[in-house]
Image (tube, rainbow, N blue to C red):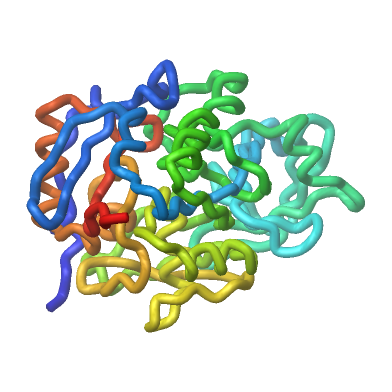
Length: 346
């Protein structure tokens, strides 16, 4: 049966789009949903440890957001904005740009005294940008770049964003958006889980274009996901495959990575590469059992992913419940925990 993108629409009052995180990471609200009983609970994120048991495994994403947003001017004085979305080769990056229609191949843009060259226009609507020879791009971005946030976030406090738009376990630079489910965790929460007998495994997925491009097709099946780089170490794969209890995925990035790297037997293969896995209703999960996630945009691929786990009608009902209870939505908002496998006896 063909799924329409419009089937994943819902009404959200604009004032529920969070512009800042909760004052303390662990004090975000948390909506718990048990798929077996269809029961929901209203909690605080700090309560999440109550839903883990000894032997369970939490998988987190250690990607780090880079300040990939650049502002410059053409020789005419016209203002240009770049959002770097991925490195093709040293010094050459793919990017989204505004205004992209006026950026022809060969255009030069000055960014704080550095001359960037537009090399080509890309099929998906972006461009490639060449940095001056021998430029350490990551160092350049740390000094001249700005943190990328989604267009519905109207917060340009750079100091705040550099601190709060990163997870406490961010280590490997490469994302143009944070794995937002992880933003609620603190070092103390992770310590409490480990003391409870919960193991924590770390994988990497660098969030790329898929986060920023809307679904433009009328049908879900007509959408094509952009590839994102991932890495699963041998140690992480062993921890995942040899776990004694349930698997909790921290976010949709972890979910896509594990499902991409899993075989039909539910075993994860270590390695690195690119994933363009698109999860939507009809998909059969191979390994992810319980999912920590934020509240996602209407018609988005992330909303489709959680609908594949808990059911489209149930997710839309829960979102309506969250609206009525004034939960905060999207990247800086509150969280959900979807439990498809309840606690086991130890």
